[in-house]
Image (tube, rainbow, N blue to C red; front, top):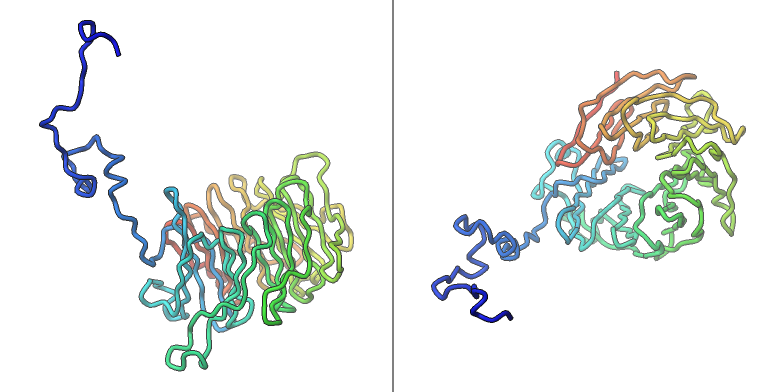
Length: 367
């Protein structure tokens, strides 16, 4: 310390006695004590619909499950809610059939069967829940019972798809290129197929066919798409497309349904430039066609429903639906949907529901 004769020592006067931190919460008389104010606020840990609506799924009985997350501050967590069709128009915490709060984010929810729910959490875990049982609760049969849980990914699961031809088998993937095929037909959740190096670039999309459970497809940010043989004991794949020009960056994928003109031989890939590319698995390594859906959006998700292909973009968000009758005939367009579109689900042949951040759900009805 410098000598007192050359400097003046400043210290808090004895008369300055502010209230304790807990009393500073919401106190406007001390505007410069924001840090103390923030630390004094008690965290709201109650189960509620958070502002980030990240995933939605529906079963054959039109029962919805919605995953919402708190994505602010240093602590992130989520809740998933189950709602009947009657309450889908106005989902709240009170009218939910069931609800469960997690200490981590709930990134993806998918119904495998009518009463079996899959949940991918932010801590890399995959959970399987039974959602309905009159034996456990005859008065209120909607109730949660965990069937299995496993953490077989080194990072959080970014893609989860159920094989519609075998609903007890699902495939999961994470951006680092890890792929797992799971089966919960037995008493536990078991991974029967695993690879750690599916792609050399960030894995961005995955899709499964409608009519079989023999294959699935993945794509990455570097413009590579691969088709995998799910029947093989060891991971086995074939290159569907590999962009050597470094001009294409895939973002998502969807497998065509058997009702389309070319059956389930077509696979659609979205990219960062707003285009949808079509690849015929019988003629790999070339595009059958390329269609521009958005000139100012990144295609974030593709969803097949019979002969209809829903194309969803972000930055800015928008939805277009095309009828795949030999060409991309766009029959519906909506560019006023969400600030950020996160997930979508078909409820019937003409209705698509999309969700996004900001507690918002939009219904899209095609003619």
